[in-house]
Image (cartoon, rainbow, N blue to C red; front, side, top):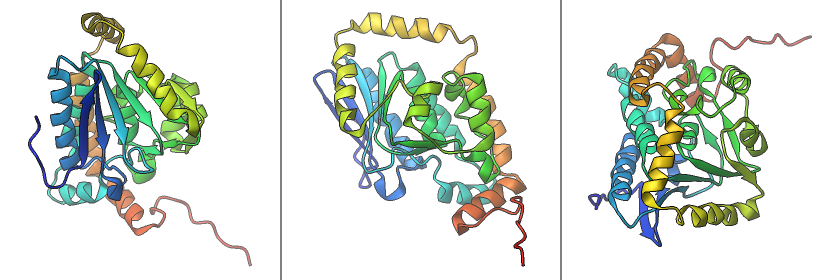
Length: 266
């Protein structure tokens, strides 16, 4: 089992063939900090190795599914010339390569890296009132690392619109463009998740792994090689002048310098 940590950021529970990994950093909007991702990878490895587990359920505590990168940690790492993107590549690759089906329960907003987690899952169900955004360009960076999973899901036209505008969209749109499998009313979320999990546990473990391999075969590129390349590209933007200004503006709750100032009439 994963080592016990005093600051538990990911909870693990397994019964009836289902291993549930719950993001439990509500105070930080379940941001993808290094400690959270470390615990997540430990728990995910346990679930994959446990022969009694048939399905892996990705859940969250609190009202936010995942707010993306921990910008406070990112800003501190950047001062040392580093960006903690390498661990996110491990998280996305591990989810994508899991031989066991992964289901994401999205009961709240998701941003940036959180969308990478959703796209890495085999099935994802969200509330219709959940909101999503690829907000990176508004911070002076790009959604590089998560593109390895996200662009395997989104239609090209939708990807162009959502990547370039950074606009917020709801659960209905998320389902329409392929980011999630289904969007359901809030009161139906748990029933929808139970329906998918109940169907998946009936599958033979070897056949489920084989079916996932067939689905992955549609994508010719090696996801780990692609993630490594994207992490390098992401780091360049995070370390750039625009990236520094964008993160600073977000933390200061102001517009970054590149947003045109509208002159007020007299």
